[in-house]
Amino acid sequence: MIFDDNLKRSILLDHYQNPHNKGLVDDERYHLIHNASESCIDDIKVQMLMEEGKVKDVRFDGVGCTICFASTSIMSDLIKGKSKEEALDIINNYYNMIEEKDYDPDLLEEANAFDTLSKQANRIKCGTIGIHAMEDLIKSYDGQ
Amino acid sequence: MFDVDKIRKDFPIFKNDPGLVYFDSAATSFKPQCVIDAVNDFYTRHTANIHRGDYDNSFIVSKDYDDTRKVVSKLLHNDDPDQIVFTAGATASLNLVAYGYFLDHLKEGDVILLTLAEHASNILPWFEVAKKTKARIEYIPLNEDGTFNIDNYKECLDKYNVRAVSLPYVSNVLGYINPIKEICALAHEKGALVNADGAQAVPHIKVDVMDLDVDFLGFSAHKMLGPSGIGVLYAKKKLLEETTPMMNGGGANARFNKDGEVILKEIPVRFEAGTPNIEGVLGLKKACEYLMDLGMDNIRKHDDEIVRYLIGKLSTLDNVKIYNPRSECSIVAFNVEGIFAQDVGSYLNSLGIAVRTGNHCAKVIDNIIGTTETIRASVYLYNTKEEADKLYGAIRDVTLEKCIGAII
Image 1 (cartoon, rainbow over the protein chains, first blue to last red):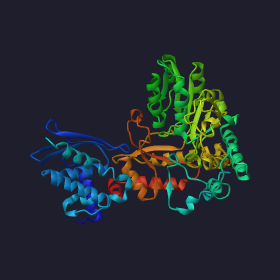
Image 2 (cartoon, helix red, strand yellow):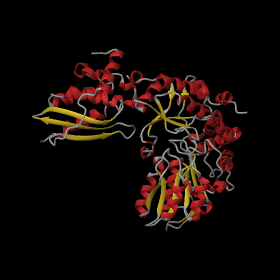
Image 3 (cartoon, rainbow over the protein chains, first blue to last red):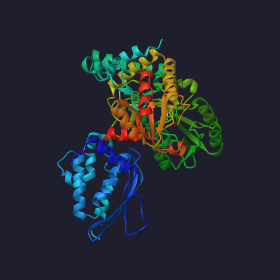
Image 4 (tube, one colour):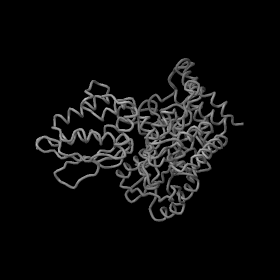
């Protein structure tokens, strides 16, 4: 799935202006991670609820640039409802895309809009800060 | 006559990258050919260690190295070249002041006065010194627009047992010039010492350390046309005599024996242990000479003209908020409504315009201007009105969609 630039732009704009899964919930079953970039504005909190080895819900909130919000919004859609293994597989494929390694575009759906982010070295952090939080949240349920 | 076209010919980067519009000289400046040649000459013609060899090249290089203290002194209107210590840059200078001097001269109950518009390098060493000496840090409240308030400062001096005042001469976020002369006079009345961070001042304005009566002033060469990794600490000699070197080793001692008896070399070389950054010093010398040839007052006039022009243009745009409309020195800080600074920065980059976005190492300034992130355009002696027009045009036409398009 390769998008043209217009489609990429409209995907990112849409997720930035109307982010999905935005707003935290007051529910102690959710695990929470606060990730802030030391080099730019991005400062977000991500929450996750996992039950029976599945990602039941992902929420996020905070301040961030277009890349930060759009990538977090898109990934939250992608991993919701997935098993732990499936979700980590999607996340790893996303990292591989950003690092210009082999990856499976079919797994990434709208996240393919970031397939040239690797060329913007100073924005890679923006495009991974929320995703790193999700990875850590999934792992935080290990052994529970 | 200040001829910017002629000046640009001295900077090879404009020939090598003719499309580049560079408004980030507050981060680092471009280098004129004479500075590059000085560094190169050390590597290709006159390689030698200083003060160690009994041969011509070592004499030549040693003389140039020592003469640099005189040239820097001339730039700073300092009457004693021994008061010039070479460091790795402004941050190293500041650390030498904080750890080398104040660690031994502060005690519980003493107060270190700072402001909230500080670069990290002027806050973090003080946190550490305060922790170790049990001295306390207090912040001088600034005016709403981020400018210095002398009455608030006086009040702090009356209220606290202030021993150290540490401030930027020119703020790297808002470009305001602090009244260092008055600040020093008031501090000295109370027996306090003043450290001024000169990183954004020495490249842009005439600095007269004798007139200011400042106790310590540090700066970096790379922001004033010189090489990276070299800087200066100016300090009054009697204070240098009470400063502990942060590094010991070859070049800093005159005599020592195995029982640990050491006679340190004289000031300032005792602070320059090890083989120093010789080519950096030689480059710094050329940079100072280049600046003095142009004249600091002329440079300031030019910078100011471009800053006023850029602020005038940008302030006609409804979607732009300028945080320092009264900027006094080389810096314009602004944001475009509805678009994060960094997204605008990526868009400008796609047009070949280099600015800095972010918090500029001043993590606590949001208390003052109500935002953590700005776009900072900083001007120097080679910038032109045509370049300002390009920046203005880009900001006038910027949209969120264009910013995203520039990133993906």
